[in-house]
Every structure is written in structure tokens, then in C-alpha cells.
Image (tube, rainbow, N blue to C red):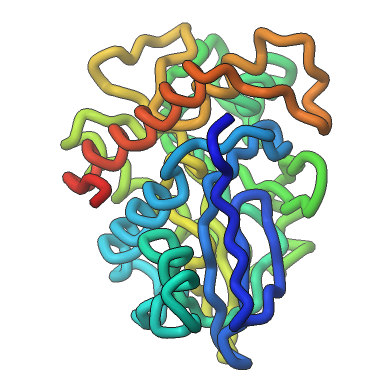
Length: 296
């Protein structure tokens, strides 16, 4: 079994533990986010980590935060994570897999943008001809590019599965003005990222953003952005309509899990060593292709 990286900082109070991230308080107005190697699929954390996954996600998210900062403010403070922890052991724990961010008020929704018909959107379309209440043309195929990117929000579940919701339900949760801002900015972020990724031979089929509000009520991009955990990345040269394309993200793990007799509730099954190794390789390749960067 691969050793599971887990942060264990004593010098800062831990205030949260998500499926992948550990969150520590840095004073009253900032937080340290440490990205583990944990992997969740179907909203269940798997028992086996993906080596260096946290480092890849951090590097990729930081790349996109910088590239898209002209569209919307983000959570980053620019503070070196190693400067806010105590000793050599803690500095090693946060090195390359952490960010120091502003403490903001997170919105209770996930901002999903789909450019292609795949995943739960494809299943929804097959049943209803629509995705999150958005009516689509008839006769579309699996993985087909949509006429325009669509905004398909979901509720954020602390435990269990996130649920797709309509735009009207989003307005009820966060208000009409914020809902409209989130939708419009999410689609702009997706379009710009997808256009860039296309120049690197990668299709961004869909992605998920999260937003918070600052003290002035302004929208801020938080959590992660356009990583292999929050997006579907497909190699353009092997993309075909009518199939589930191979991908550079955790879809590889999802596809393996779909072959098992598992009801998608905890506990999750163990992953074979070859699936772990292949997934780690795919994450690294996505980073190298999109950003030109490799892990040190």
C-alpha cells in the first residue's frame, strides 16, 4: 500500500478537513490549505492515495489562478506557506502542496460549467432531454460538444453526493444578483481556459468552480481552479463522439470503479497498484501538458 500523506501541523489550529484538503487557521483572517494525496470518487474518499497528487493539484491550481486573475479576484495572499508554520518537519509537510488564502464566506453552491455532454449531464440528458433544467437539442451523442457552454450548478454536500440544481434554485440559495455573477464569470473562466487548453492539445470537457464573498460582498474565486480533480481533461487527438473519451483526470479511477459491484457508499474498495500508478501518471501528464511544469 502506498503511504498516505497526511498533514499533522501542531503550530496552527486545524479548522477543517475536506475530502482532499486540510485547513488550518492563520490568525483571524487567513487560512493555510494543505492538499493531501487523498482521492475521492463519487463523493467517497478512497483508502488508497495517489502519489504526489496534492503537489500536482497545487501547482496546477496556482497556474490557473495566475492566468485567470484578470477575470475575477482569487483567494491567494502570496504568503509563503513555509513562513506560517513552526519547524523543519512542518515546513516539509506544506512544501509544494499548500497555499495561504484569505478567509472568505464560501457560497453554498458548486459552479459547474459543461462544454461537452458527459458524466451526470449525459445521464440527465438521456432521461429528460435536459441538463439541470436546461433544454438541449435532440439527438446529441455522448461526449458531444454542446452548442454553447452551459452553467449547471450543484449543491455542496459535506457528506454524500452533491446534487444538481436549477438556476432558479441557485437564485434562492444565494440571491439573483450573486447567482447571475457566478454564472457569467464561471462561463468566462471556462471559455478562456478551454481556449488555452486547446492550444496544448487538451479538451476541457467540464469543470467546477467555487466562490466566496469578501467583506465588501465581492465575488472571489476560492478552493481550486481547473485541476484534474475539478475538471475533465481529454486528449484532443483521441477524442471521439459517442464514447467516454480517455482522460487526464480521476475519470480513469471512476471508470475502474464502475466495473466493480460497489454501491458508491463508504467504505470504498481498494485500488490495484496499476490503477494507482496509472492515475498518478495521468495527473503528472496533465500538469506537464497544460503548464509546461514538472514536479521538482
